[in-house]
Length: 250
Ligand SMILES: [Mg+2]
Image 1 (cartoon, rainbow, N blue to C red):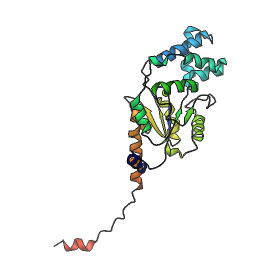
Image 2: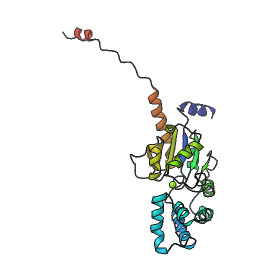
Image 3: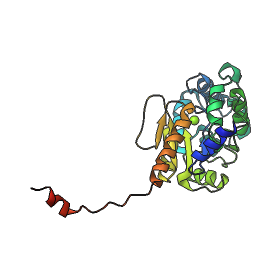
Image 4: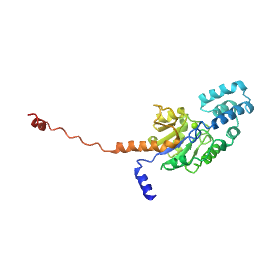
């Protein structure tokens, strides 16, 4: 065990900081949970905010594209009570969708770097999800919608704030993981290493794509291997001795 630890430690090239999204990233986004959350958002917009049935879908789309989340649009245009909204939208029985994931726990625990959750969701929901999967003790902390003063990803301010909260690491040593492509574009431009969770596609606008969060150690391995390669000193090339070539010319 101790030897394993030493081996692992010696393989470290730099200290990396991992910022990991929650919904759709720490669990499979097609597990049915999003559908129930989505239904609940629509119900809230109709019943609590009073938006007409036929306007709910276009309003949500508009807010999502314009502000990054339905909640942000509802706060700006309808002064919704944020806690009431979040409690309703997340108030489902998580055991219908989530179960302990010991494989994910093992993979994340094997990464010897600090990990944070960085989500547009709120802390209560985040804690419930992490506990349902059994990974709640693996993170330094949770950066949620309250931490970010309700300014969601992909607003660039939010990424600067997240970096500051993580102790201002060198941008090149931040690894940010998210299942939403548009959330990965600003941090890639800021020099962060970005990982898109997508089962089928890859995209040149991000640094890496993996089908599930379980593959994160492979990404780290790749980054560290690359880092070790750049550390190998360049060998001095000896000039060719042309007089020797003359000797073989007969
Ligand atoms: Mg997500």
